[in-house]
Image (cartoon, rainbow, N blue to C red; front, side, top):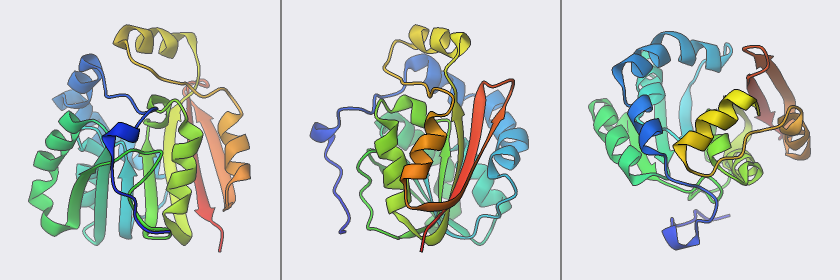
Length: 209
């Protein structure tokens, strides 16, 4: 399948981040937390190599740490929100041609089938009302044997309250929904693990040959 061009007029399910969320993910405390805690926890022992795609990069905090810690990694970082694309572009400029930042709809990624060795999704799927489409797109652009790695929020009173205050559309995963969707995709060795007393779920899988 050829690469798809990004057309904002066709986007129905990917809202821009709220002002509160933008302020949080661009803050120095969040960047420090991402560097010291989130990235190692999210990778689950996977060593990033080759060409990776991050969907929903936000400020680029996670991407910055990944590129710093893994000098042989090349990364395409995407986000739907143009403000976050500008912030991430500035953050990742120092990595030169190892980092590219693009605006993209996670439910219709503008990349050809089988391009990437690794696709990363860090707490972004709940920002996509039809997150199943984003997950399927992530698998589509993986090469056979490539890895899908990430984590997301599970439905809870706490997260419903937080996102209600943000005032933009989200869809939190119900327990078991992610596992069911992964079984429907062309992946092998799907693995999920709940954390933080059931508030979060980590996941990884390999694309089938």
